[in-house]
Image 1 (cartoon, rainbow, N blue to C red):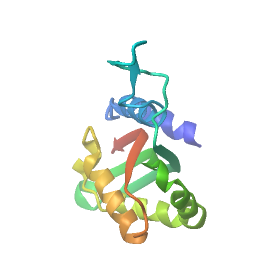
Image 2 (image 1 turned 60 degrees about the horizontal axis):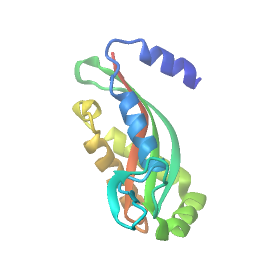
Image 3 (image 1 turned 45 degrees about the horizontal axis):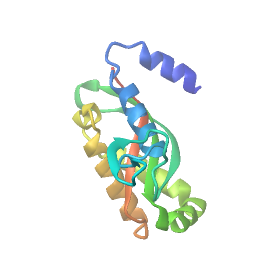
Image 4 (image 1 turned 30 degrees about the horizontal axis):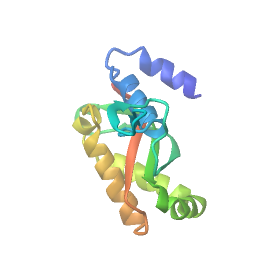
Length: 162
């Protein structure tokens, strides 16, 4: 089912061309350290980023695949979104995050969809998807106040408007 949706979305001229870039950035953020510096033999840092070192102190988890279809009354626009939502927290909050995911995963996913519904059409077309992520995070915090300081990351983003 996912392959059929992605193939139809990718063939449209209105498809966001930056979805591969977002996927790359999210993958790099979860797998590679952004500020890891390698050291010279004498112990001083040379300022280069080590691409193979995982980011220390960050725990990331995937909240799942989201497919959203919305029919807006304005101009009869049909909006289709598909994306994968990731959440990253500090390593010291890993036990709390695992507990929340075990007990409230469906509730967190529902809160993320409510955040998507609250967005305007122009929010789906932003290159960084900042408003979309902010609204989803606000809904997650409203549903679950114990949620630790986190960052939402979106990958495999596809937007289509008919």
